[in-house]
Length: 214
Image (tube, rainbow, N blue to C red):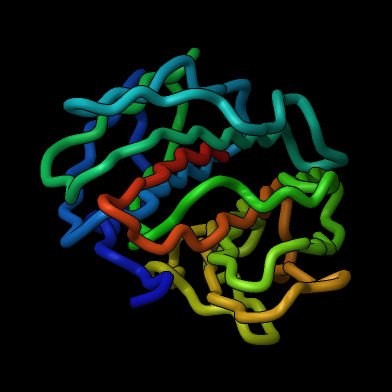
């Protein structure tokens, strides 16, 4: 077996609330990533909870963190799970603003890639450029956008349909180290990109879960 995408939560789009609860089901040990995009505001994630999981903040942008057009933020949270997950994740925010949350699983995801440049963030409508140290990685990225249907290029796959969403959530699985790999979307505002290494099962698997807020 190897790294693979393992379940994606419903694509709800933007919701104005101080917290959101999303459902996710995975089939085995692996990474779970929660991604949130927001309209301009000053929202940051204050906590992420799920049954049996302990989340910690990995990286993020605290608004106001961009050029013209408003304030955009981003957060990435990680947790470990040794079994398949089925249930709800609750994401709490610092303000009652418009946020867009999804979650997905990465089977056999282990620790984050050890490259000192990760996780990377941007807030000025520029390309992200990521490099990795590990051969087998699951790469993921999230961008909020000023256009209703953002697009990307290269070998990136979309996690959910971005049509009409003003945000794009991306991933790809690689089997070689990456050097200055481009991550971008048209008219992007705030973004995060990161990588998780493959952890092959050995007497039991370890899941790594992530949460990202834009």
